[in-house]
Length: 282
Ligand SMILES: Cc1cc2nc3c(=O)[nH]c(=O)nc-3n(C[C@H](O)[C@H](O)[C@H](O)COP(=O)(O)O)c2cc1C
Image 1 (cartoon, rainbow, N blue to C red):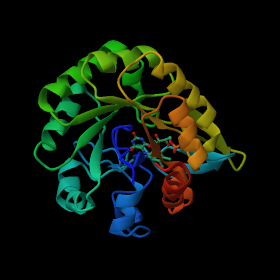
Image 2 (tube, rainbow, N blue to C red):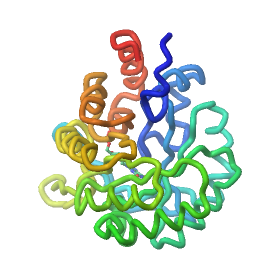
Image 3 (cartoon, rainbow, N blue to C red):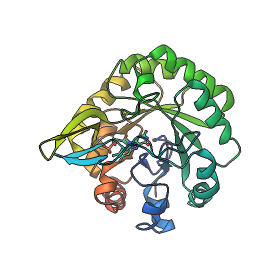
């Protein structure tokens, strides 16, 4: 087989996006260890915070035309529990593990980065783009100067790969440039779009919209950003087929993440990776 590893940020060029596959259990139910390795170059964990979070009250996920809206609120066991219970199993996969980090303040991100030094984790993905929390999250993504400071401070303590997951709304280009100038290795474009559904004619659920509905929107962002920044872009939004992956590459992405499609059909990524290999030799 040809060696494509240098064409992409990682190889195989598919990653599993944060929050859409639990912390391992939902992946290992459907994939053997060999299948995990053949399909994904990176697994990005659910957003991990310093303290455990129970997240928002239900309903917190709802179907929308061609997608989903979610308001999970970053439910997670907290960094100590994550390291103790989940990380060892994930590291056994022989696939690069990236931990998605969530903090309310810059100091939280720095403390979290310190926690993963020497653990075998390959990289960190800073989540500055969650629309479903009161503090931190998307609030960072509206302030390029704060993002610059955040990346600079995390870079001081973290030598592994450092990605920043952008919000698709706000001053996206300025934030991307702030990431580039302060030492990020790549940007992930992008998180969910703020949206709202009315459930059963009365209950309002505000959250982040994902899935095929957002693909043309995020694809355009990737296209525009790839002309303005020179660090690699990981495309993420609405990917549900090999053609979707190729579209992201055409628009300048150096790898992609698959999210909602995994929730809808956990085995789809296997088929996508196989098609990319068999039809496109990648
Ligand atoms: C249920 C759910 C939970 C998510 N949790 C996180 C999270 O913890 N951290 C994060 O950065 N993104 C999170 N995301 C966003 C996804 O990783 C991805 O960026 C987004 O859904 C767009 O990709 P998609 O259209 O392929 O799903 C979540 C998405 C969903 C649907």
